[in-house]
Image (cartoon, rainbow, N blue to C red; front, side, top):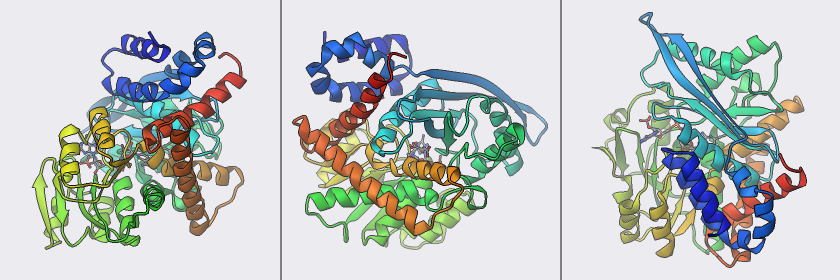
Length: 444
Ligand code: NDP
Ligand code: 2IT
């Protein structure tokens, strides 16, 4: 049995009932097969793949907080410190009722490769809780965040592990978390990124993941002599990543005709009104039904459906496994040119393979959504230097980083004889950097 197959079987046996984690590891190990087999003896002897697929540390704890009715609530919380070969653990905190250890492990594993691709010195980690921020008052959010940080603070620090936002964790939550860390630790340090601009946050961090996605798509299309201007785009989600992907796509002359949330989706033939979407989602924290009430060109549909619309480019920006084989077939039938992931692992393995086999340009999230964590790393640099850079400077750095990521993954794919397979390119390029750093630092 090949070393990669053996390690995948080991991961599945040792981590039962964690399908998302198995999926993420399977995708990576399959891609690595050509380079692992060239050097199998060395990697086997070093148990490199066993170490790479097992988190350095998995921290599980419960927190309790009191809701507005005086009832004590209990939540499960996680921080998975996956790999710090190239820098301090870095990755977001997800607050969503679906959160479990397997989901945090898949996200942490992906983060290791993503962070390597940014070219910046950050290792991979992820955390979160099954706390559901939906419908909670500001006081309840604060109570939960303070309870969460009271435990989490023992494990994190500006040079050890630097959390940030993810699903359900935005500027408000980061503010409450940061305040509690500062009070308990008694130091003012850049322990979290995505902070507000008045207390150490970086300009352009809010926009970074969505903007970065479009910068990468721009470079991908340029490489294939395709113009972005004039293209029709389907976006899923209506959170941080989706909103700023829509904004940048429209600034670049494309027309985004869809967005969604977990209840339903919007089709807007006139193109999504991003200011209205921000008002509905960022200010009112309302559902998309509010958007269509104020927008006559838009229709609202219950459930799933974004991928049924005829578009040139699809940008899944909501959550894992939201684009399956049936969706991929529909997109191909509608002659989609490119799919680039804004979310983490939004495309199932079957859908990814189908899209690639049909000649659709496909970029995995660990490359295309790396702009967020890249600007987080720039926020860490600014905090260490006690500086704050202009929006233009950060945005220019982001553009350089995303262009460089595209070039890196395209080149890596070519080198292993898989030209145009950006899944292989991203996994191989990320792996090479992390593996080399692990080998240089001796067995640990
Ligand atoms: P937000 O919480 O801001 O938005 C999430 C969006 O996705 C909402 O529209 C939400 O709808 C929808 N969504 C979430 N869960 C589900 C679900 N189970 N089914 C259907 N829709 C769902 O999160 P972000 O925009 O920050 O994150 C979106 C994705 O991007 C995630 O995969 C995240 O890991 C990834 N990502 C985020 C980065 C960041 O910097 N924020 C960086 C890189 C990747 P609803 O409101 O109804 O729940
Ligand atoms: O998935 C991701 O890359 C994020 N949620 C952002 C992580 C970060 O540390 O900014």
